[in-house]
Image (cartoon, rainbow, N blue to C red; front, side, top):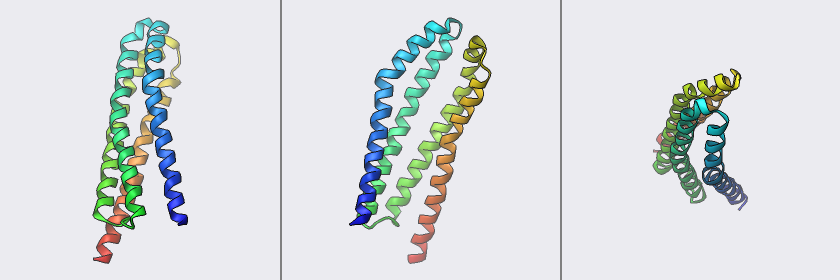
Length: 155
């Protein structure tokens, strides 16, 4: 019974994260795009492309959240070490890799904004943020490998 509380807390955290990102996509990104274009007219194209890129990265993010919810269901059903769990972890890993690649691809778009604002640290911050999904992908790959090894041991 205690284990189910942990998975319910994780489910709640996943749902809250999803709602926060959904709210950001609906409310914050459009206003950031308009405000950024007004603030940096010479970099308005970069601001637009960054906003589009953030919308695109929301798709694999929500897919990863869905897979995480499925993984928690497998854990509740006692199927934590099953092929279904390994597949869910694999999908989460590839979503994180895709998000990281998209973020890394967007880092050069920060140059015109950093130049217009005279803020070279913006590119470093963008690069650091782009590395976060890569760390998640590596961690997920480790979990996937551990689950796969456990499955092979029990067969």
